[in-house]
Each structure stands twice: as structure tokens, then as C-alpha cells.
Length: 337
Image 1 (cartoon, rainbow, N blue to C red):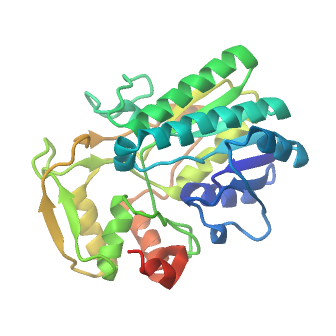
Image 2: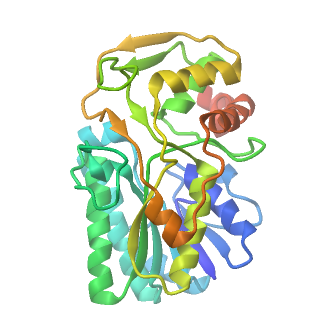
């Protein structure tokens, strides 16, 4: 099967491309406008198409040219804080962009898609672990756009026969073995890379936002999943659709919760650096605890995350950061930090 990976030059996308390469069933093609992705993260042997998912005609033309059988869709804006002050950008890039992608797929006769969704669709859950049928009450625009897209795909399934899997990630982290590719967002908003940049001296300190949550140590609890385990899930999801699996939604998490303080302490142990930590007030919209139940995914897809201990995740990310202290951009990127 030929698979078009939109946003395949991004963090999770580039790791998924490599997971697809390991499978004899799939040939991947990367489709990315490089607005946030990195051309350097795409393997030389993988066809790269620079394009925008908003361009329906070009999307359809690309799919026909490369005889695409299915799509794994990562292309999106994904900064929660930014989504609250620039909602128009998020509804345009995420919702309208995905609509145009789906319309392009229809024109090209492609009917299978694995979609990168998020645990943000749940908002502030009443209890954990979170199951797929829990209430959907996103507290930020980013989460709302992803939920709208899930609803849109459900409507396309009913009307046009689309087959989809939506994968709701919890906290993706880590990097490829050997540190060849990794996480590089501008600006960076994720906890583990921010911590490691602090350990490197690229940042002055790491902030803990809120120490009075109803958790064992007062800081937020999150479920961290290794990016390589996430990548494997996308391959399994496409195999599921190729085998006639019905459209569905699955959580992807390690099913374990770790506090901000715990992650900081593990990072100090892994790096050997006692970096500066500053306690600050809560940020609005941060739930106290987000922990997944991944039982449904494990049963339906046969997914078995094997790399998601915090030590393994942080050690893998540390290798990447040591070799790329300023990301893919090197010294050029240093100037913007």
C-alpha cells in the first residue's frame, strides 16, 4: 500500500514514516508545507512532496500520481496557548485544512485515513483513567478543532463511505534510537524538551506551573508515551483499516501518570545536571490529571507499547538534544531562542 503522510516532516510524522519503512506492507510518501516541519527529518529514500493540504486540486493530483491507497494525517497547528489567542488560525489550518484534504481524497478515490487527534478533546475529566466514551468537553481551541474533525470524519463515513481511525494521543515524548531525529518545535511548549534544554543551559530554568493541585505532590499528572510506540500505533491502525476494520477512535497512552516534579527528578538523574527549577502559579486550562486507558486500542489493534518508561523516554530525548542543542536549525535557530 502507498501511504501519504501529511505533516510527515514533523515530530511524530517523521518517526511514523520510519515505522512505515520497517513494514513490508507500506511505502510512504511525505506531504508537508514545511511551515513547522523539517526537511532534514525526512529520509532520503522517501519521496517528499512540498504542498499544502488546503489545495484540493494539488492534493488529489498528488494522490493520483503516486497511486495513494491511504493517508496518515498529522498536518496541523498544535500549540494550545496559541490556539486561545489565534483561534482563526486553528480553525483554518486544522478544520478547513482537513476538510480540503478529505475532499482531495474523494476526488482521488482514496477512502482510508488515520488521524492524529488528541486527549485534549476530553478537557477536565471527572476521573481517570480516561476511556474513549468519556464526555468530550475540550477546554481549549486546539482540542475543539480536533473534536470537530472527528465529527467531520464520522459524517464523511456515513455519507461517503470513508474509513478512519482517530488516535487520541496523551503526551508524546522521546526520540528515535540513536538520536538521529527528535522533537524540535518553535516555540517549544512541551515539558520534557523544555526540561532538557534547561539541563543543557539553553534555557535558564524550568517552571512548574501550579503546586497546589489535588495530586500526591501538588503538581499536574500526565501520561507520557514514547514517540516510537505512537508511531507503531499508526502503522497498526492503517493495517486495521486495510483489513476492513470499521471506523473507530482509540486512546494512546502508557496508562501511567507522572507528576511534573517526578519528570524533573528523572531528568536530573538521566542528565546528571541539577538545573534551576522555579515554582509559579497555575496556568488556566491545565487539568490536574490526564491518564489514558488504552485497553480498547490494545484489544482492537494489538498495540503493545514497550518503550514508555519515563527513564527510557527521557534518555532517548536527551541523546537527541545533546546532538542537536538548537534543533535542526543549529546555530541559525540559536539566534531566535
